[in-house]
Image 1 (tube, rainbow, N blue to C red):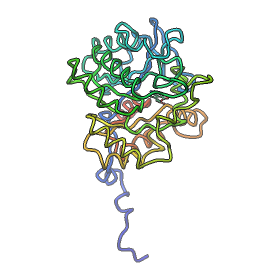
Image 2: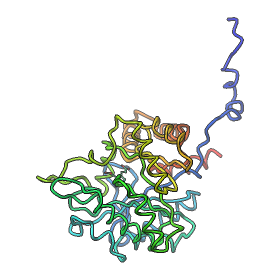
Image 3: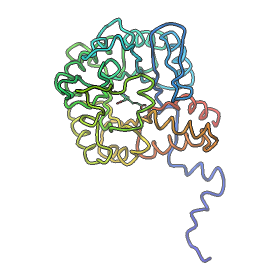
Image 4: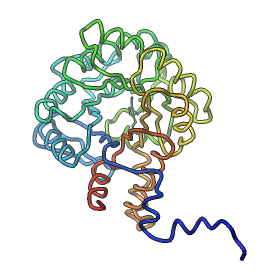
Length: 332
Ligand code: PBG
């Protein structure tokens, strides 16, 4: 053939491919989500998430030390709260001696440099399994935001570096910023779950925390009145505009793989760093196919994480963080 351009020339050797690689996956970008539960010296594997555990605080600290030693910059913490402690207003979430603040303090004491990001939402503590207060079948916005401010301050007081509201109530970023500043936490950052979709991919996470919406007459069965419609894209930019106006330091798109277009659009429009959450269902799918011998887990996970970076994510919250840090170190 009489071809003038032959793109394959640059793919011929490993070093040619190496110098022309456009996207690097580094441990610098990875945040590990971790689940914490009450008790001591115990851990329970999440049935739908191989190798992911609910840890008691002492075990959580050991895991955090391992992650820190691997070069992972931070963790995102999620609490498993016993059913008996849940109620309609998530009151356990503002107990300064509760499981979550204790876990944050233990992490900051043992590994001060490791960033602790919180999940700020009512659902792990809600007897209704919703991210907000439910009144007559409606998730009420403004009363929920008031609770969110108290929860954020409880987490900041315990030493959290980054407050991450994951509830999708309107106006919560600005309200939390004002509350944090008023309480003397001007240096505590906010990572907003800016475009959080009403996604089926959260299933394994809700298993991990037993936090799915409960069945009941006046309790909506899904989160569609606050989380976004998977069919929408412009709406993500509207949420971005509001979060930036309200003072978000970082913004996040969630889930990641089915929403690479959203990550791309948000990155184009944002002047703050963009995170993406490679969620529980994305992790479970790759692990399940890997266990069946249908996919190569390592190759698929690294490809997925690279694609999320390529789409525009500066940071990735991923249950593959520990594995990926090891794979990246092995390859170096
Ligand atoms: C709840 C919250 C959820 C996740 C993070 N924070 C679940 C939900 O909204 O129902 C999901 C994370 C994952 O699936 O890995 N505020």
